[in-house]
Image (tube, rainbow, N blue to C red; front, side):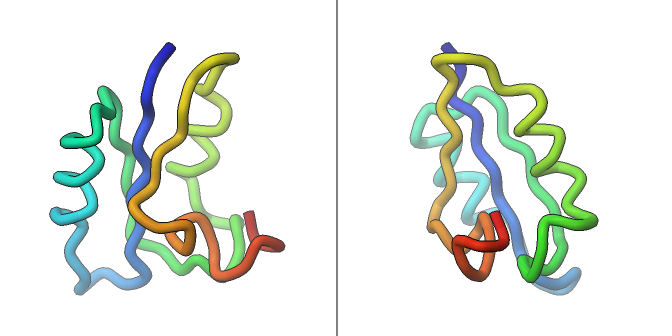
Length: 75
C-alpha cells in the first residue's frame, strides 16, 4: 500500500512548498504536484498520472479537497 500525495496551485506564481511539506509529513512516499487551474481535469497531467498509477489499497492524500477541483463535478 502506498500513500500518494497530490498538490496543486492555480497559477505559476503560487508556491507548492507548503502543500508538499504537509503531504510528506503525513507519510506520503510519493508527492506529485502541478501548477494548473482546478476548473477541469483537462490539462492536469500529474493528476491523471497519479490516478493511473494508483492500485487497490493505495491512498490519495491532498491538503484540502479543493486541490482536486473547484467542485465535485470537476474531479
